[in-house]
Image (cartoon, rainbow, N blue to C red; front, side, top):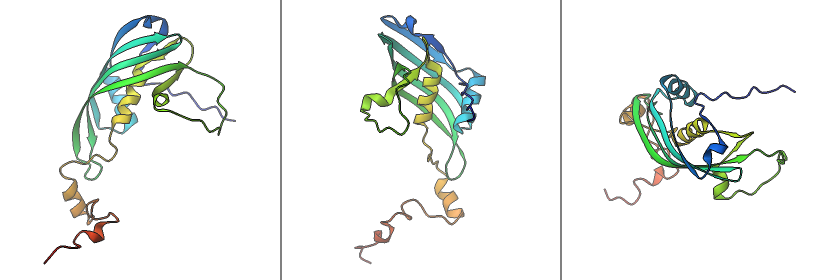
Length: 177
């Protein structure tokens, strides 16, 4: 069996969970090299800013992080490939939980809404930078289109998404001529 190399985060900000006694504030910001590496990882043209202000609260070995992520990035239009500037400012919430080895491959498990925010960690350190990077990745619209998308579709002989829907045949139905 071949070992899969561990992913080395481009934007790592390890924090010892013992630093999260009570409530602790942490601000993280990606530097230019980290933003460039994250842009390559996420298929973006560039990332101009990536910051997060987080409040940490530890409950036993679980650490909850709440706050805001802010980012400015440029992404290519999914149709025309033009550059589109995007600004992000949204709340984030993650819960860091100790890794367990009680997972059985292919075992069906029940998840509730809170489980989806959990990030496993080993030892005594959590990585706020990687958690912020993952939040950014989840916020990126893979089908983002810009103002030139319709022109690019027409030039390529492709209709709009509405023209290709199962209901396109009904478009003119019932209209009087």
